[in-house]
Length: 261
Image (tube, rainbow, N blue to C red; front, top):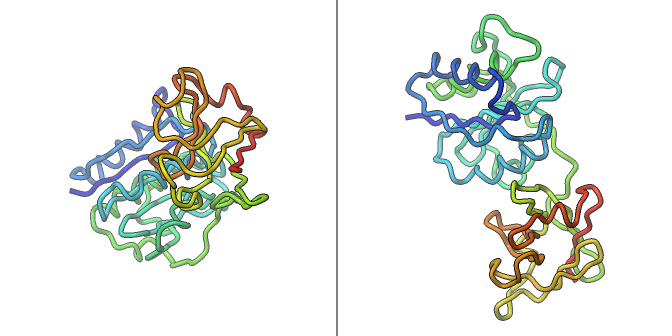
């Protein structure tokens, strides 16, 4: 059974998501639809790109990820069908594939342009329903990627450093994502930390000039309400408050500075 995932900024209040699912159910009734999230902040391409990367390796080969965060809908921006490490994504070419493209080998990339694989009537502001959903359904039903349009080797990527940058013998990181707990997920990657000599890595974490101590393993190692830095499940350095919200203490997001010294 084919899997089609949905990752959008539609929320669940309006009819948009249900319409997209209805198209998929009509064209690929055997497909299994999996919701990743529909709570991406409106128009926040970077947030969606990070979420897509984190779920990518956990779905089986052949999965079709339909990603609909599309502030340029109706413009000349392209829609891409891309295959990385055996999985597929159909998404606007606006940076949504940035992190997946950086971390996984590209196997094929096509422009989604064959109108025979779209709905007959296309609304300029609803390409998620009229183009991306039917394309995902057809792909999951066995239509070959080459049938969707020309091959391309170009895609738009976000201007975000893949990893933290060196600074004074340490690392200067930035926040890539803030989760619902207010945790700051940074671009300081686990492979930049070096070996842990004992229980902790040999770094001091500094947030906005304030030292919050070494990199720890789990929340119980600090008092409730205290900040903590640790390597999270995504393999990135994260900064949190034990039973609190780090973004509320250290934000706003655009003013955050996270260093390892």
